[in-house]
Length: 429
Image (tube, rainbow, N blue to C red; front, side, top):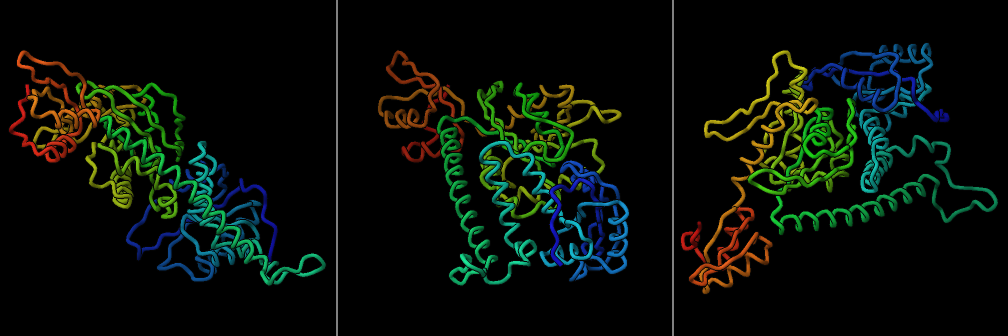
């Protein structure tokens, strides 16, 4: 039976089922927060367990009756499932419950649509929504699965459903082209930063770990930050100065979450490149969250999926103000290198330690020396200038060029190799 979908879906019933065969069981607390972030008013959370989903309704007949009774009693407008539903399962559930049914992917997409502010962010969200919708078109057009008819309505043999699918496909291609242009612009900006030897540091982490609050504390910006899931969606970049390193670019990115829909990762590929091509990742972790180890594992999984798992990473344990004995400190490995910093972005404790740790880690990858180049190495001198690596130049009494050079260590070694000069033959001061 086809029915009109409501314009709003504020009164919500939440459904969370544990599947023991998946080897993972977790509380629906985060799902409740997701629903609230989307603007829903959860009136009931229905839990249960099964060995595997029912092919037709996802839940069993008894649980379906329980959901139906609560929906009718509460006057719910939407039922949210903390799982991925197939299009046919959504359609079958809606026919029984007589209200809108949304799965976890649809819920996250709705939150993203509310949070997007920039042109790029809106395009990325629309792309993910259209790709999600393309498999679910039939739900809204069951009454139009036939040839158009009537005077002035006879078409060239295309059903309404086929027409909508074609238009949807054309819109998806159009958005992908526009996002490709945005991606090219981002790539150009990254290459420009690389040529000017400006390191990029990217904030990553689980949603609501405090990345934007930390970003604001370090940069003095006013990026929107709130105690809610996915408060930040659009990437923000700021240039700051770090002692011993100079200028760096700090990037604030979208937070990750368990069961993050794959199509969202694909849609936000251009944004997430800021992380995969960064010189250093700051993995921000909510130190007070009882599920912090599990959240860290989920973030590591997404980083691997976007190709950022090989980027050097500094773990930042945030929100020590919420710990009973939280004190700012730097934890070091056996070689004395920082690998973990404890701080509070809320009250600012430990921010100086974070900057110190970032400076130490970036210094390992930056060549910052004063070089004496004789006249026969004029080609090498020109190559340093081509890479905008020369901070200052002067000449000594013997006519040699004295260059203050600063650039990534890997670029320095590549320039020497191209010039046919060994590292040992260069005199550094």
